[in-house]
Image (cartoon, rainbow, N blue to C red; front, side):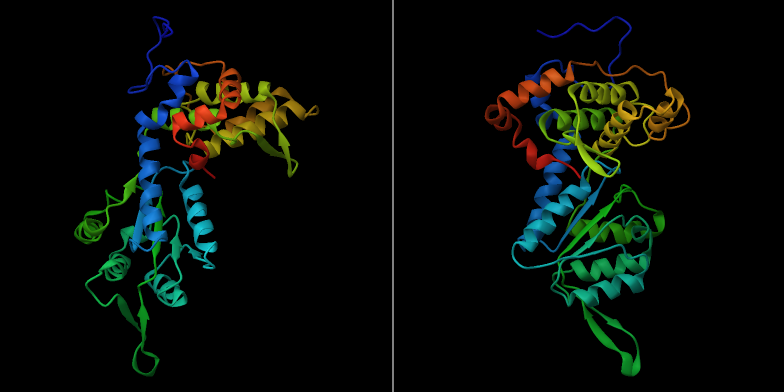
Length: 316
């Protein structure tokens, strides 16, 4: 039975009312973040298995891009390949990493927002992804001249939407992304909240937190308090994401165990995750989170079958 919402409640646009475990296990089928993550995983796996030369992934900070990168690295390392993880800031640095790879070792380039605003670096990516071209570039002049292969497998992540770029590089971007469209994880606060809570209910992201540099398990009380805080502050949190939920759990756990801290100090711990100006917009409906989590753990086989292997969706 669907729970009736109070008359004053207006749920965030597009979110379904989720009160039961069955409701929450339907998130992968309807949530835009979950669908984009599945598509991103597919694109990255195509590169890992040699069926594609590049994958572009863009989305808000902390949503799970790093987890997908770590999955790709683990797959390559099983075959004895150690990818080069880098953040080139200029065309010269970019070509340098291609030279280091020898055209073979995979390149994983993270937080490449600035490079996608640069015409010269876009030209390098165009050469690297042109399967009908030589996929190489000249470096140096005279006796120092050498040919650098650009044929390494590439995975690129960015926080900005690289489909929407400055006018100066739009033509280059179109040519580049016509070959391999980027997967865009949308910036939608409501859906980011829903995706994050779904992961908290179906994976181990809140199983342990770091306190005094030591990993500790958290109680059901802290589990509930963390997701309730995350829900109460949906419109105030700087980046609504699994990463921030984990940080909130860490701060709340510290607050419970820090006997020498004042209430004000405890409040400031969590405020660092929020914007300065508080919003009064309506928040999503809250549930008995720990009860839902226990229900999920009580029927792991059935639950995982229902939600499409939730463990594989766990973000870093």
